[in-house]
Image (cartoon, rainbow, N blue to C red; front, side, top):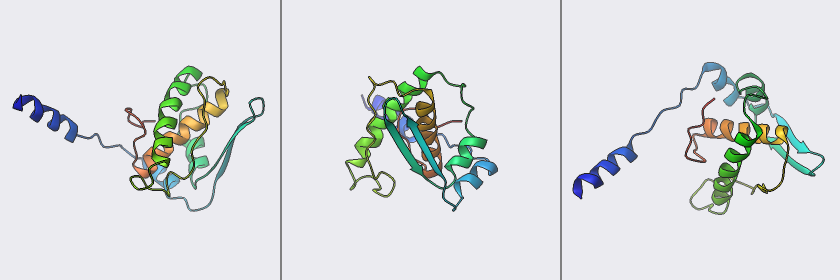
Length: 141
């Protein structure tokens, strides 16, 4: 029993370090505001992201549109939105300056590819820039 406990503690202590390129670091260090509007007029759904560097990162670092399937993006977005919203509701445990507003994302609604693509990539950008983890997967590019 003791050997098993030590093994679990040891496994939990190891962390993989993300590799951030100079180009990505420049996007993270941007101070000028980027505003990205994510919308689907049919579902009347809109997210506005005001995070300096995201637009640059999206257009220069992120995988291009079409790289991921819509179902992949939806599945990852569901997990990350749940974790994001959990953190919004716990401002004493998580930085309220990072997690300000809940995201109303419903799995039964088809938001379309563009909304899912940009939301997913914002989550990747956010996790890499602020060294956060919104799910069980490493935020890789």
